[in-house]
Image (tube, rainbow, N blue to C red; front, side, top):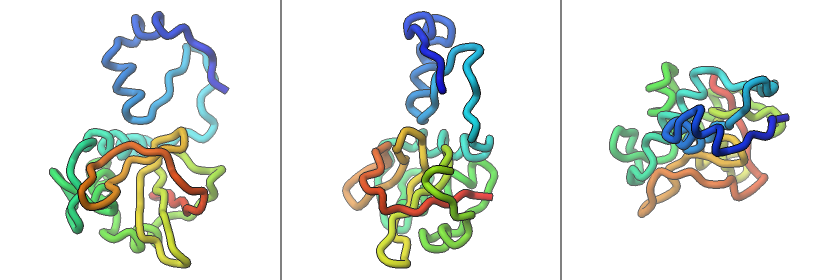
Length: 158
């Protein structure tokens, strides 16, 4: 449960840039004394979300793993590497290398895998609020988007 906050007073306390940055990386704004999230993400996971957000607008390029262009698994591997964790290169390898969790247990920084049958073919980094940072496809850029299906798997980077 998050406490209600009067937005103008929050901006004057946190600073406009800080508050907008928090929103951009999928953060939440809580008032002093508000209850912390019972399922808080690890510092590494939060950093990975921030790194992915910093790459917003970078072009998609199949097989690219940064720093200037990415495919989906390249973005996940890049973000986690910058946050201090190593991930395998492909989407399926990333799925195989994570702790599989339920949607109810998902936290910021968890990986979201889109699949067909038993094969994972696309990955994004969970940003909270039902959204992911991902590199969607040729002709697009890294962006924040709502998860468009419930038929996804979740994996936590250990």
